[in-house]
Length: 230
Image (tube, rainbow, N blue to C red; front, side, top):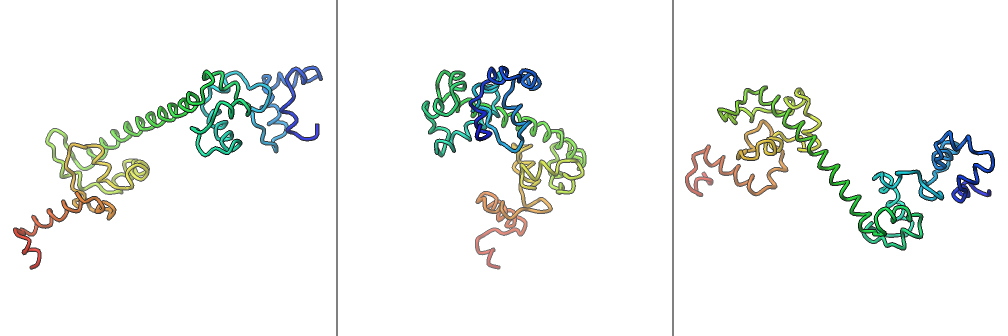
């Protein structure tokens, strides 16, 4: 062999014939795992070996890794541009067989899995959000039976932190209690200016901007447009 990459052309049978049975057995007949362990400095690609281990292509992470590599290999910008020929000429025969020789089915399988993972993550976040709202409501004395929504305007970032919800508030709601409550109780006409602090980005929403001006107008008892000029 002139380089480590020559190992891609070696079969398990060839290794066994040269007293390599015990070594293969140590790695459950997985040439990729064996060589990656013995030569960690080399970044072997599992699909370039004569065979991949059983169940390899069923793993969505493996499919994603292969597709990312394949796009670079054949110089395609998106996975939707990949053709049967791209797969068949670049170690993707086993994957093609699994999806009836259809590149579209392969790509769709990745998108479906991605959607499932996003839905599962969102479900978990919603469950966390429901528990967080329960703690916050208890903290400020909100009673759903009496609909005393006004007390929820007292909520601050500190309240979320002390209830263990600072991370969720930051990542999903931009650290805005208003956006959190708007999602938790979408049927309530929340007024962001009534919170202790209002993010200025919210004023980019024309509805919020108009609502704030109406609130100011009402609180100052303005009745006509001329009253703004007093």
